[in-house]
Length: 147
Image 1 (cartoon, rainbow, N blue to C red):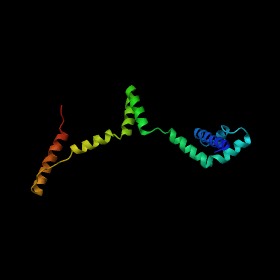
Image 2: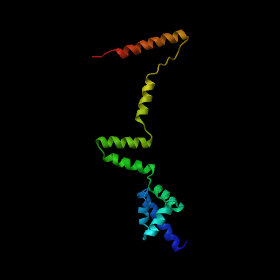
Image 3: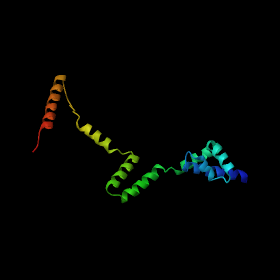
Image 4: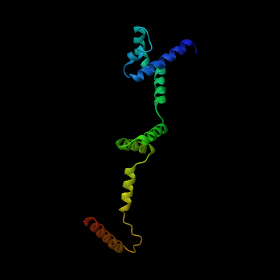
């Protein structure tokens, strides 16, 4: 690559960065890389759709994105110093990233505790009798008021 090509590539990357900072304002981005008004207008018109500029924008966005582990580490560090509402919010974010969902765990546990299991039933009539007895027990315990 020649010096001219290197300079053009660097200018396109600078334009891409400026365009990322001010999306939708190509003339402002062009002002960062060009000296004359004529050149700025040409760049603002042509470069936003230039393949090299688009690729530079993609590369710059990917470089700027933190990884999952980066976010977990930062959340953990913030969690060590947080208190009150901040602690709850950071813990929620940390848990979501880790894939932990307390609500799902609680609902599954609650659903499992309300299951009627009859280990041995010799007939449908016997199963029905056990089910009716269990329903009476559940109804009685649900309507009992403790003082």
